Image 1 (spheres, rainbow, N blue to C red):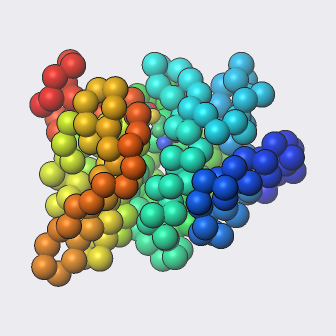
Image 2: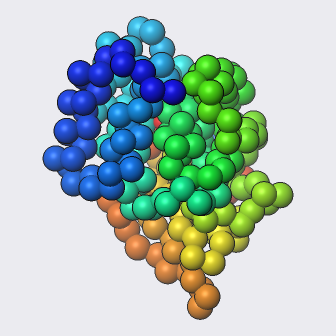
Image 3: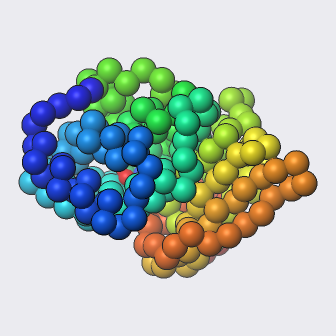
Length: 219
Ligand code: SAH
């Protein structure tokens, strides 16, 4: 999947991520190897290596690189994990995860976005990802439990089915708050139960589903 196109801007983005405190070398390497510009619409491609969220259609956005990097830095993946991602969106984070974990399961509710993400991932020969169009707030029980679960949209609460699908030793990241402002919550499961802590403030598009937002109100 390695591409030399736009390598200069990509290197500058990586320097920004390092300056922001991202230390995991595997994460920084993944950012160097995954061409973010292929995951954004052509109209905003010239901005692909800015540390900014960008529109991807269907009213959704590709998240800011520093947020993806923070998620991955917190998780510290070793390459052996089974990972569940909620909100495929552009598929960019999916591609990063595919490099950093063993198997990725990703769910997106907007079929048009999933079609596009699948196409880009296929063109980059990413083949350890399973795709599902549907409501990610109920998870994907069939393939669980997961070592890591990443929610890429903001929810009024952490969806309980996702907590239930977390393996012992597993960790889940989910933005929790109101529709325009959240805190990213880390849920860690060990033999004695789950522990919750706050990682950072953030601003994500709403998680819409049974255990997320329904028509502007919490489910
Ligand atoms: N990491 C992605 C984030 C995209 S924005 C990226 O950087 O491209 C969040 C995505 O979550 C949107 O595409 C939105 O359609 C999707 N989404 C919202 N609610 C969802 C749900 N219940 N299940 C699955 N996907 C959902």
